Length: 175
Image 1 (cartoon, rainbow, N blue to C red):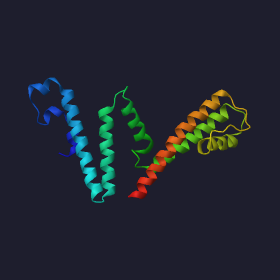
Image 2: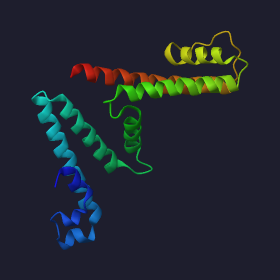
Image 3: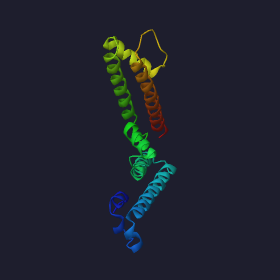
Image 4: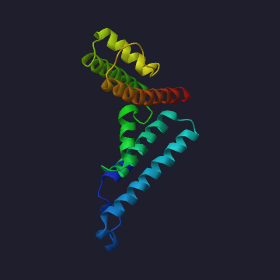
């Protein structure tokens, strides 16, 4: 059985059958998850040491996925941040995914500005691209407070996505 299958099975069937663990399945399950995470980390470091970068990237994704599952609960800030990191850039391994999210953010922003201002669709798209890529400087357009807050949201999320995109590109060139 591979490590992934080991993670997915019930921890009590793995070999620990003492009464201590039968009463506390969650502790044993967390221990097994941490062990699998550590093993994936060791394998990733081994592959990096010997220059097998694509395989190291695969084990990095698996390691981060297990860490996200271990930390995942509704109120877990680390688990939620790892979920966003996974969704936006596949843990920094996929620059295309981040680029697609940037385009989606720009288009949604353009639609939002078009809906709540008197700008044309073309001007809204330019306005959104300018807000996302260049600066938060207010220009000659009279904007509502709602659009100003949206621009702030777009600026924060856009800067984060651009950073993730550049990190993913860096990781690709590093290999």
